[in-house]
Length: 449
Image 1: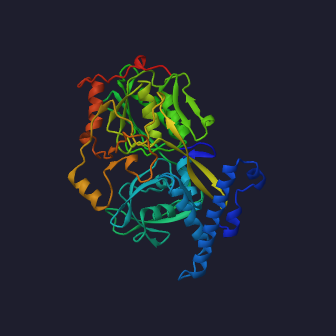
Image 2 (image 1 turned 135 degrees about the vertical axis):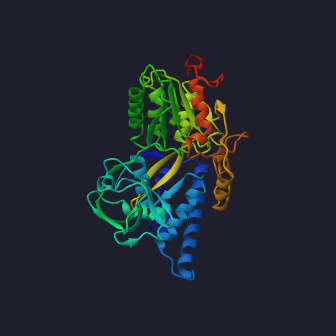
Image 3 (image 1 turned 60 degrees about the vertical axis):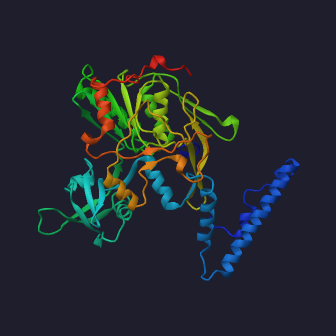
């Protein structure tokens, strides 16, 4: 998430490190305890300098100074909590891409299959679509370099690049006797963070996959398009799917919440300084015009997703359906540092409008329904060392939040909507096939804030 410089969400010698950030005149004005603490800090920094020099002098192979310093910074930040981290130049750029939702690329959604990059779908009006790349195509070479042996992230990194630069793709297509070659020119691509469709002829389904700069505009467009397609009189309501949405930037979580709220607080953030509390309020205007809303969450719904779910739940503007969310209620500031890098530092906790912290506890749905995870999916996940149940409370070094922490829930969504019991229950509730006291939510019953 983003705050300060960006709320998301050092190559120097040891001697220089000792002096960094120290102002002796200021320290002389501090009380005795502060001076003693500063003196102890000097001793610890000198210890670091001694260890650094010993490693440089005596390690079996000559190490790179910059890598030693970077590793030390990584260790310092990762020891704080699971979400503070050092971002090198590449990681910082990747984070900026995710934040902006735009990058230079080809406009294809891809996955890995049998060591080749498989095209899931080309995005409309992008270089890939215009060149004739099709869903199901297997990309075998990138600029004549074999894809086999690359990871998916390496292949994606190679396909991305500066706008207006060319790249050659060698493609294996079913039904073609020999590979096809395409030369594409990279263009500015916008991440599609919002997808929508009509469910049951009278329900607007909107999936938000992450929170980046284009997200709120995409949501507003989806609401307008679905309302026009279905007809305002016929429209039963909206299902907002935040399952497996890991979060993103704070301003977009606020904007998305504001789409459905007419007034009141959306979220507050509180840092170490009691005077640093910030509150964010909704502006007049519910773009869904009071239509019922169901928000789907699961163990993969985290951070910005939980801000939206918590705000709509506290204001009783939406019914939250699914399983316990992840439980990440901390704010990270992305702060640029020297060397074109940055640090992602936890600087605040956030609270829902009612003042509750869901850190390591998660959003408890109004209607709980845990999606069954198929046996084969569980077995594959276990073999890969991936947990099917996710939660902040299970992360080593997480920020504590009292005695009643909870460990999350499954983060599985069936690929076929017919097998999606959470989605089907939401549809049944909107159609009146099933009833529950928590649906529809009644904003008049919300506690004023």
